Image (cartoon, rainbow, N blue to C red; front, side, top):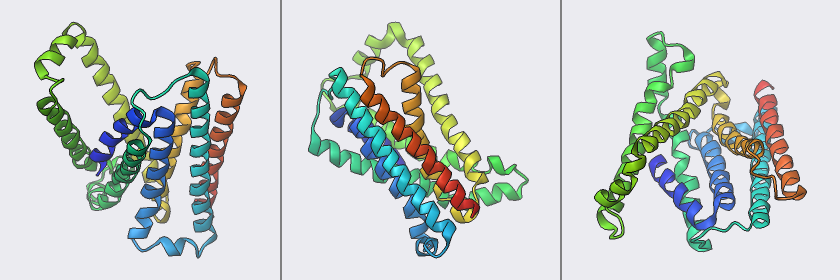
Length: 263
């Protein structure tokens, strides 16, 4: 599921553009990946029976609102800069965004399904911060197989692509491309390395909210880094104000969830 979600994430950006694509895809995967876990475990109704559970669900809802506001800011930015998806296709893009959102939540489901592996690692004396890491071999291995299969199928069946031609074009920059690929892969992995740390610190009855925190902070950090890199320099005050509001709402959502877990 997670590998298919990754592929559709890239295709969503192609047909909807970055802001709309990220907003819809991340919004769906935030809700599905967070709430489906307690639903499948039969614990969802129990959350409404305690003040902590209700506050945690409120935090998830507020986080979704924050993601929506940041997405709106991104759309305003793209309009101000005259940026449009080159292959914009609303119907195809929305379909892919929904598929991406649902299937990307497979990472959250996989972490829940891997609890026996976590328990086995803990029984061997592994630090609780690292018990989730062995399961990544299986989880990310599945994602890698799907992505590699998709890439090689495209190379094999698309007439405009060929391994020989495309790799020959890239050969002058091959070392730089490999270096950037290694850097990108390392940084990308580290998000889940630290996700495992955070997941280990969350009380068992609320472990499902780790996915909500991860996805909402994904959007939050993207907005903050964009501001630091001056990507919003020439867009005017309104998009920046909307972005700031969205980031603030996401921060509030994380605190609401924290209060819910402490209740």
